[in-house]
Image (cartoon, rainbow, N blue to C red; front, side, top):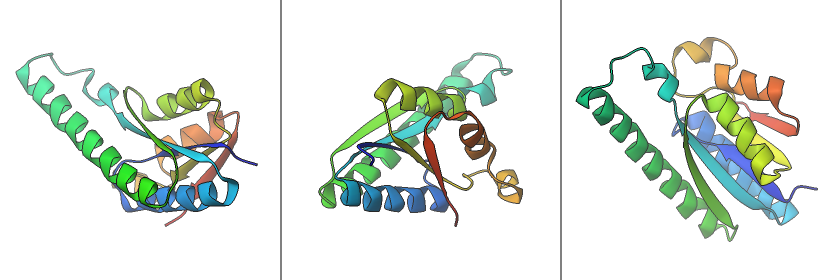
Length: 142
C-alpha cells in the first residue's frame, strides 16, 4: 500500500508518462503525490561563475517552476493531493534523498529524461535512483 508517491519530472515525454502513472497509483491507493524537478547544477560546476551562469540557472529554474505548476494542474484536476519540490544538484541523489526525507513509499520515474544520449540506455538518473533507492521504485517505459 502506498501513501506518499514521489515522481521525478523534467518535462520529457517519459516523465509525463511517469506523472500519469503516479496519478493512477495515487487514485488506487488514496495516496498523495510529491513531484520533484531538479536543476542539474553539477553540469555547470566547471564553468566560471559569472552573469551568464546565473542567467542559465535562472532559465532552468523558471522552466522547473513551470513544469511543476503544469503537473500541479494535472494532479489536482484528478483530485489528488500534490506538493511540488524544486531542488538543485545531482538529480539522482536529490530524488533519493527527498524520498527518504518525505518517508515516501514509492518513487516513479521515466525510463530516460531529456538528454538524447540517455535514450541509448536506461537514463543515467533513472539508473542511479534504481540502484540507490531503499524503497520501491517504478520505471515507466515510453
